[in-house]
Image (cartoon, rainbow, N blue to C red; front, side):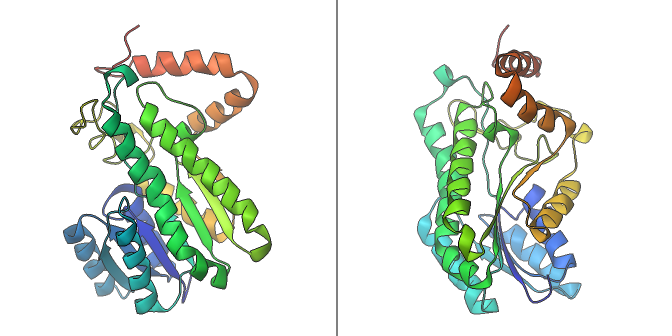
Length: 269
């Protein structure tokens, strides 16, 4: 990754932050994009102290103008773009019938349109470098999850967009990775939206039993370097994808029962 430029959205915490450090350790110039400018500025400062190249750009990926300005800032600073990691994401937890439509729109604006906006403006530079677009998706992009209709819809949309993009530019050297980390220890469940749009506040899951963001980041970086098409992590995640193909009805029941066991689950058996 020496002399390569990597943009990472949602870089203030979790998988995005871990990816930033992992790419920097490989020698890349890192562009940290997120709404929390204070956090990414602090991270960029720490990276520079360790001899890495880093740039913090305040970015709300749901605003196309922010995405365009972020890409321009990256190119002005480093001259090119080699990797775009569409990681910024938002989750939810509520039954569809109890969810305000604005919540689903917000999820699509961040998870889907955020990826579209960033990719659109970075694409000309990525084609020049025969670079990579990585979408940090979810098992919810393979299997709809109850209580997470908006999240699942946004990840299915991301999958369709990235698959079509891969085929459109397959003869021009663009690499597209769709990564589905599975349940990863991060703050995405704490910031997940309830039916009325308020933050959930506490994770319903045992975060310490999940795969760490650092482990996920290492596998994502390796997948980018190897130009892999897909990355599905955790045994549970790979089993879900397998059952989706061969026993979808069985999987539906398993997913329902599993998520119904969450503390304070919106699904009542």
